[in-house]
Amino acid sequence: MTPLLHTSAKSTNFVPMELITSENIILIGSILLIAGVLIGKSSYRFGLPLLLIFLLVGMAFGTDGVGIQFSNMHSAQFIGMIALCIILFSGGMGTRLSAIRPVIVPGLILSTIGVLLTALLTGLFIWWLSGMDWTNIHFAFIPSLLLAATMSSTDSASVFGILGSQKVGLRNHLRPMLELESGSNDPMAYMLTIILIETITLGGELSAGSIILELILQFGVGATGGFLMGKLTLWLIAVYRRIDANAQSKEDTGQATSMISILMIGAVFFTFAATTALAGNGYLAVYICGIVLGNATLPNHRGITKFLDGMTWLAQIVVFLMLGLLVNPHEMIDVAAVSLLIGIFMILIGRPLSIFLTLAPLHKISLRSKAFISWVGLRGAVPIIFATYPIVSGIEGAGQIFNIVFFITILSLLIQGTTVITAARRLDLISTDNPDNEDFGVELADELPTSLQTLTLTPDHLAKATTLRDMQLPPGNLVMMIRRGNRYIVPNGTRNLQPGDTLLIIKEDSTNKPGKV
Image (cartoon, rainbow, N blue to C red; front, top):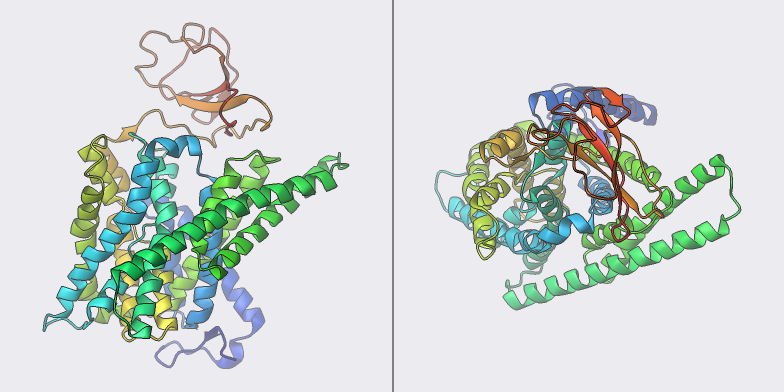
């Protein structure tokens, strides 16, 4: 059996085989986690995406660094599959139908046709480059499309991590649109990758009809399976609650929340496996299952969300560190020139052109919004995970594909990831009414016909009223608390308000699902 961690003959820092023990692997893993978290904590101060930090930490401990080589692509693919299921499910849980309803059409168009156009345009450019005498890549048309398809999806974790840390909101419903696109475009990129790999390995012709049929089958079975599994999971939770109906103490309630959270994680993997076995797209099914559960009434919703957030962070950290260990930096130097050209093409031409063509019929979306969407096309862990599939399938040139995708991911994070907020400011898309749902740590029971929202005051809000008594709040709205900097203030009618104060408002709402703050 090949060990997951072993020495590399190419590494100048040789690690004796007798040191590769289970205890040392656990020790190294813990050091990687601690180092990544501590370094990543300060990354947002410099505008660096957290993904990039963990990738660099992994690379520092890898073949060309400390000397640990992780080269088992099958294990990497399996770990990435598990992590991606958790990440997509958590993304679905956090997707509010009320928020995405105004942008569901452009979001879905971007995640399907937009991904297809990005892959096609980038694939044509790679094919053109391969015909040049001075390049060191020589891909045929289908392998060129395969390389483009693996990196045709975007990553939202780094973007919204930066926006969240900077307390920055976006105008024109851009945030839910980008969340919907990034949450639902991974399945499309996965399907394109698998279809192109099958075409190469089977030696068949690329038929438009067969591709369309495969996409319909994958989307149809995936969407249906995810919806049905979401409903089935809700039924299983109801059954568990009836069985546990006699639990009255806080300890029992906490245990019930933990068990329900674990039940949901089990449902995630069952959804992926069952849908994939039925020839559907498991990643799409997992995402839709998360949407169904996230918009339903769940016991102790906040506790479940916190559990899933922790699982998601762990999944992201593990997969990012693993991918950093997986690459050999010295091998990326060989493809640095062509990778740079491909990356610049994707950032400046491929992604913007596909966005503007895709959204051309939607005249309500402004040019500034389209330009920002074009810029927020970060590549992340998903393209690197998808780039392991050609290697596992034995595709010729798969090693070059992996190194090119890894290089472009780092390039995208360095260029786009560090300029997201600057781009939003330059395009005047920063929203001053950005609700910060974690400012107060308050949650209402799902059964109550009320919701919570926050409002950050600006000079415009205070132009006609400087106290709560003078503010004209809509009927049924009540300010519960005021946050000023790091202070929390109990409101009263004569309290003078200042720009930057954040109000926690409880609102009577018998139609919408209660929110959490």
